[in-house]
Image (cartoon, rainbow, N blue to C red; front, top):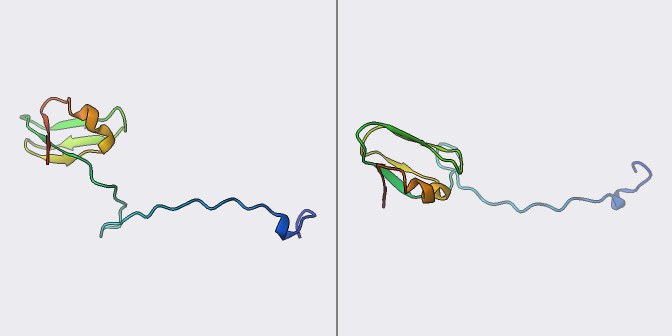
Length: 85
């Protein structure tokens, strides 16, 4: 008994549902894969998303980088980036 109440009177918070997350072999959490973009410029390119704040780094021409699905709509308009399958 605590503070004049019995344990049966103590309210409990409802449990939150958990969403299973698959972990790759390196132990980091992964999201479902987003679209891939290939850099077709002449040098390296770094793009920072104004939506998610994520930084996408293309180290060399021809490099492909997976993009967060939320960033797809604006990154489509970045020069020298082409969506690939």
